[in-house]
Image 1 (cartoon, rainbow, N blue to C red):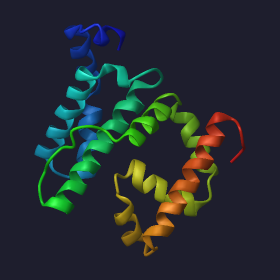
Image 2 (cartoon, rainbow, N blue to C red):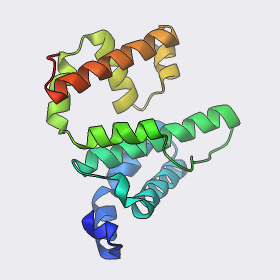
Image 3 (cartoon, rainbow, N blue to C red):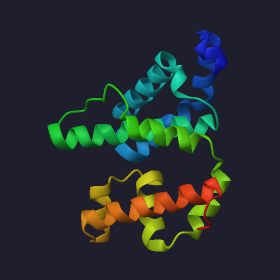
Length: 170
């Protein structure tokens, strides 16, 4: 990423070659629409090229997968609200903060901490973050009120953060 920040096109091409299948795969899981997944992939890599400072340090694969998921969910939300397939211009500040935090931890540590959560918190987190479901979709699938789903996800994420920071055991 240092080379990309220095506008090295070859470094960017290497990143694209290494991660485009991951980005496309995440987008396909969320959207189930190949052209839309291609658009998301393009938007993600455009964001990497145009704003390389967003990635500060840590696990690049986790960071870019999170961006891809957020972009794909934005497309789903846009379609639901507007009946269109538009990509959001920029990432919300809260999502950028989450991406930074997630990029700095390893997948193994996350899996271990996630396994320690009670199922009522772990299941909606897995559905949302790894299955690509929105909170509304999780509420419909589980039959729980939307507020309950949001609370369980928020509580579970807080517990994960504390466990991963080593402050509090899950």
